[in-house]
Length: 158
Image (cartoon, rainbow, N blue to C red):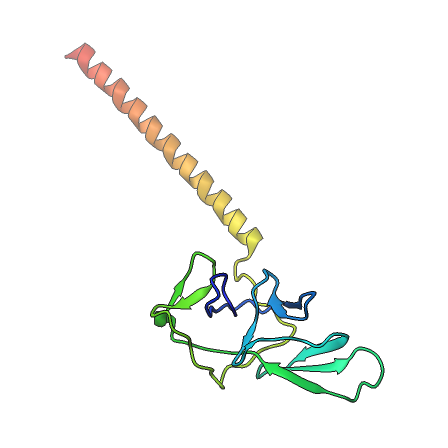
């Protein structure tokens, strides 16, 4: 994809839309790139994306047998150690270059990656930990009060 600075950047977010000018973009407005640059989709067509990143269109009305290949999304898989997350939330290569296309990577159309955290379970765990913390703090306060009273008894008898 094309980052806000105009340079090539990378994301795992594959939620795409075609803007009013026919350019394929992410939902946040960055242009999706092919090997040849931005991807333009002809008007009045339906878009499909193949597992290898091939973007094909068919006319929205009329004869549906005319399939046209528009472009191919640039799919990369650089080593994780070569990536750095930028302030824009996108990944960039540490050296500032661009990654090569990786033919072994496949796209799964219609499937979006989501969080691997169960929100309800995490909330219950957080409440449980908070209660344990409160209990430990009360025990410490009780122990301090007992120590203070014991010191007072020692002072009175001594």
